[in-house]
Image (tube, rainbow, N blue to C red; front, side):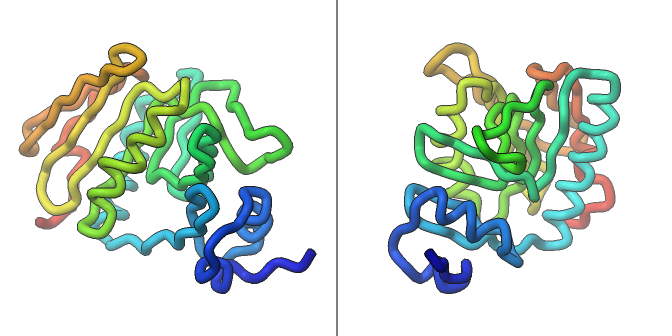
Length: 195
């Protein structure tokens, strides 16, 4: 069977997960998969990338010597209960990494996911993505970082259907990531970011 390119695929109504994965291997851009629909990922701004890079560096140093792996935006995540494949901005995954059966490029067991919000993705990251992420059994913590002013929204799983929400404002604030025991300073997170 010959498949179309991702560019033509996104104009069609429905694809199987297998067709999406085959297309994604040769795609020049990243695309998410939502229950039959292929959605192109928007490009990031310099501010988005600075904040993501800062968070990645803070986590990388904090995780040294700990049994976790850190992944940035190019790592695909499978969410089988919703038939979704997504590319979170940042994921922390405990070792050993659980890969989707038959794949070497798709992880399944994040404990922490971080998204940097933008005007175009803010509602999607807060609502549909978070709802889908919550179906992952290993998922324990969600961090949403605003790129327009120093503000972080932090969700920590308390029980099967209960999440504790805390928000942090200003560069003096500190966020404790409980799943990996790392404290993040908003001053460090937003270093060199101009509002």
